Image (cartoon, rainbow, N blue to C red; front, side, top):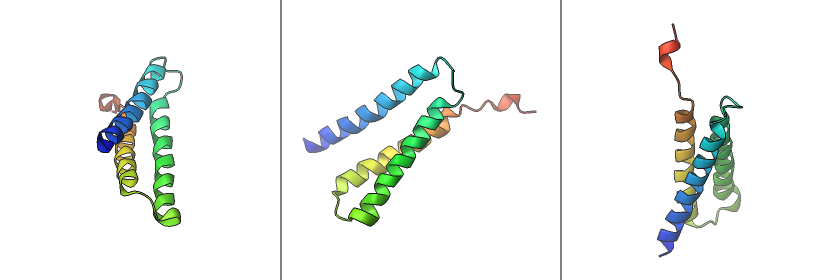
Length: 90
């Protein structure tokens, strides 16, 4: 039951960030808004992982696992958000 709650919390957080950035990205006011949001989220998660590994050292394993997966997804989403159009490069 606890792992189901953790999984729901993880996916809920990720998809809320994704949906909110997609909605705000529709207006195209900032060129790489979604990239900036996911890179900054990745930096925050990376700092949190650093804190858990080197400063606190006594954190639950499941917390680190969720942070690793969330960090990976945020980095992949940031790369995907660049949405490079290689056909315009001459």
